[in-house]
Image (cartoon, rainbow, N blue to C red; front, side, top):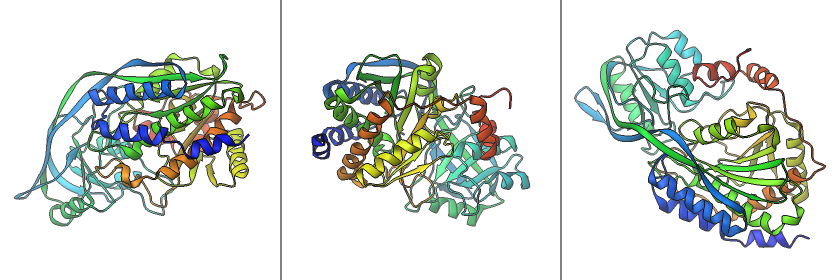
Length: 437
């Protein structure tokens, strides 16, 4: 009965796919590299035994970076553009808002200023404040430009998109700078006029979602997902090559346990996650969400050895994760709150049961993620294999007919967002989908 565990723990299928993905190079949404990675993933799912492996095209807003710069005094400081920043130049006094919490923006006069904020939050903050929320607070305050400072040392400027679904290109130029450059700017040039320049090519483009299936041909299905795109400045090993590699490993394991699957399992590797969850949003809009029993979205796995599962108030998802942890004597951390970032959210916001699967980390933020340091040698094959064992069993349990996961009313999701102090941030970033709140 447990022979499959040994097979998974000695399998190289997932890790080999991870190596293929990082060796593609640039997997930016809409790029040739993203399509190559999607094709590799389609073929890997087919080789694992999944049926009907295919690509489905998605139209997106294309964006290709050019040169960017910060001119301060007689110096030029290193920076990189944030994806979907407009190709523009801005000048204004530099204002360092530290962590860039909502209250910091309320207390400052930022009209015409270049705003500098950190990528982390302090221990006393009630919640995590996302980069895009900080950006749109700056826009609303009348800032002329936005500088996003990494809190992780190592001369690593961070990337990460701006823009909204309705207006994919942001309203003011935005760049990322390393912790060291940010400190230098604040120390030497706070209050002085600086010039921020972003050059980028804005164009139409296409991305694609990868689909494949296993198990019986039931109308109801369990989605096992990841995103195949990555930012253009790095290999994207942690974010999210590892998630897609794990999806392939799960397909390989579940193909040998096909008789245990009582509900259809659909594998989806979304495109264009890093520029606004575009691939998953388009799929969520076009598919019958009522037939989705549950989503297991892998984004941020393998980075740490212990899995962390955000369950969005779905008690059955938490109970199944706890059961799998007990069965294998291996910890799985669960979090019942809402996580409105990554591809599961395109479905969970409408009440579809969704588990956001990542891994525990002691530090705030993404660590090496969204920097050029997101490389494969920081991950361990052992961790991928261990997590594949746990998640294989978790998917089998969710696919059992006796496992019932009730959808939630979107009004209840909206109420939870209000209660967890997430609603205002989503409103300012244009991500609030509810009309009655």
